[in-house]
Length: 119
Image (cartoon, rainbow, N blue to C red; front, side, top):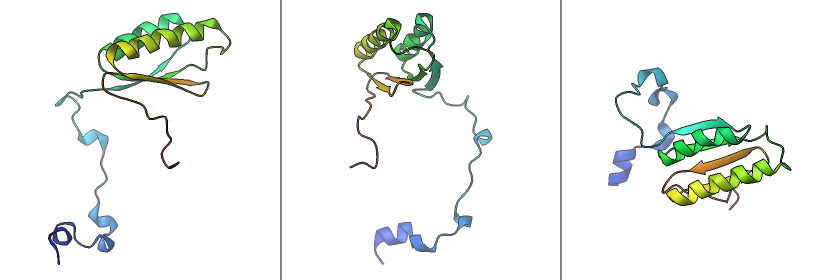
């Protein structure tokens, strides 16, 4: 039996008793600060962009729901341009997913344009 086999054991012999269900209440979120948080936002107008920009500058990732905006409204283009500029300034990334979401990432986080499982 090789070293890896000794370490990993026989994967086929595992049972449900080998796994532990994790309960989020068992973790104290105050003991360590996350380097990045993921925020869910809703954009209904230009005023909603301020908090999103601040969060991206603080190093957080934003998933913003834009369904309340009309796609033909010039406000949508203005908002996406403003968020694109923020992403560029911090070295992050931005994508629009369909007509309903914009994802903006902070410094060093890129968004793959390829869906998983489509290779």
